[in-house]
Length: 196
Image (cartoon, rainbow, N blue to C red):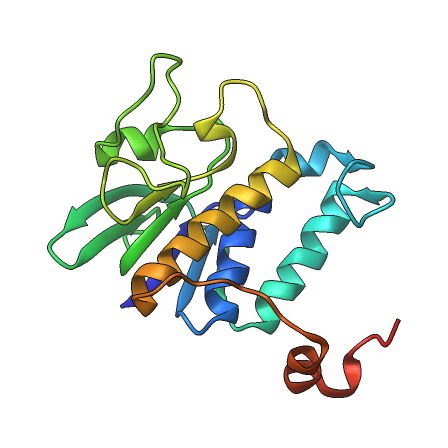
C-alpha cells in the first residue's frame, strides 16, 4: 500500500509527487501523458527563461524519479473508491492499487472526482479548501479541475505543492514546511550540487 497515489503527470501531479516522495512518503504516479504541457512553451514560469513544455516535463519526471517516485507512464486510472483505510484505485488493465491519500491532477477532466463523490462549486469545478483537499477526506484535487479558467502551469504546480504539504502535515502530526538549505542539497546530491 502506497502512502500517496497521484493521478496525472503534469505540473500539478508531479509537483505533489516531488514534495511527498522527497519527504519520505511512498508515492505512486499514474500518467496517461495527455497533459496540455506538450502544446506549451514556457516563458512565464519563475526561474525558467524559456523551455518547451515537453522538455520541461522530462526534467520534472527526472526530478521525481531521483526521489524514488514509482511512475507508471501510459496507465489510465479508471476509478477511485474510498475505503476504510484510504483509497483503492482501479487501473485500465484490471490492476488495483491502495493508498492512504489520493491527489487528482487530471487537468479539466473531473470524472474521477465526480465518481469519488467530491463536491462541486456552482462553476462546476471541484470544490477544495486552501490546502487543495476536497470534500472527501484525504482526497485532493489540483490544477485545472479546481479552476474555471485560471489554467496555468505555475498555478498548477503550486496547487500540487499545497496538497503535498497538507498530506505531510497530516502524516507528521504537525505543520510541515519543505525548506532546504545548501547543506541539505549537498547531503542529498553530493558533488552534483551547483555552486552558483
